Length: 292
Image 1 (tube, helix red, strand yellow):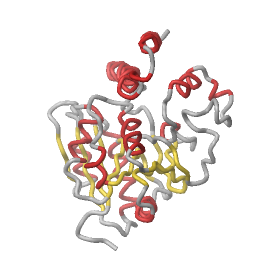
Image 2 (tube, helix red, strand yellow):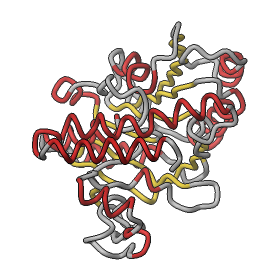
Image 3 (cartoon, one colour):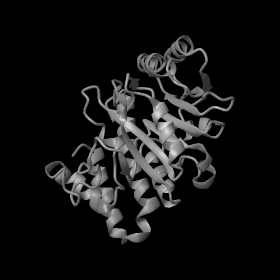
């Protein structure tokens, strides 16, 4: 039953994504908001867009709250602007390039969280338009071994192996509810009350790895991250990232993609391994950034 205090706040991050944010909000209204029994509020954080996307937002989501930033602060810092103000029991980060379907019943995610107080984060089954799972929504901790087997394509060769497929945990049953180490910030539903315990998103990550880091901090605080496949959302991936149509934006996001790998290593692993490991990682990432 709806209450005065929001049950769920949906936070969309927008950056020059006119067509996609309109598609996301229109499909949200059609397939979820018209049916939900919860008190849901919508916030759009705009990272200093220069297109007409905010006009589209105002037209298709007139009740949505807009937080307009004067500069592009990146994923973590921009989302934190909304997270810090949220009064909802749960918040859900959503990319501007997601699309809701008849299977996108977010009430089921909230019901699961209500019934499982030791769960900090849940993710729906995030799929590409083709129906294939977005692997970023179903990840293990990027340990040295998990990262090595992923980049060496051993995970691709042995997807059912717990030894070689640790990063995307492809050996697990995608049709059953189960724990994972991390999900994607593109569809990330979390328990608001825990922010004071683990903190907000780490703003040293401009984009990428902030979701991995946040999930790790929730796990270290004794909470679980859960994958719920019976709720689905489509992710039209790369519409504002590495493969974005603007070459300059694509190059910048590619830089952040590889740079944050080193940042994540420095934060969580550097003290556990000799300096030579960091040198090798830095050299490898430099090769990847150069396309070699």
